[in-house]
Image (tube, rainbow, N blue to C red; front, side):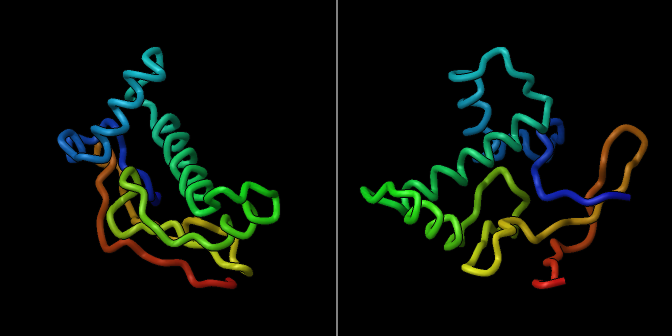
Amino acid sequence: MSTAYLKDPKDSEWKNDASMNEWRTFMTKWYPEGDLDDSATVFGYGVAKGLEQVLRQCGDTLTRENVMKQAANLDFEIGIYLPGTRIKTGPDDFAPIEQLQMMRFKGESWERFGPVMSGAKGS
């Protein structure tokens, strides 16, 4: 038993997924030597998309103060995360991912089950 919040690049469920195809295109162009089966590259892409959102929210005000303010004011989805997973932060909540889905190992691969669960804030 385990949990997940990222789409697994090896899972056939995401073979024709628009967001995973966008990631694959990015990898082919910018990191062609990267391993398309390695979920660490999916994770890194998600982190970069998060930073991109922060910078978009900053607009032309790229001060440390504004970057920190925008990083603590996120509420959006990144397609490489499981459906229903939101990147959400606040002035007193700096944990961007608080949803997970349960999964179990079934011989050769992981099988997700149940709903995407949200963690309780402040716990």
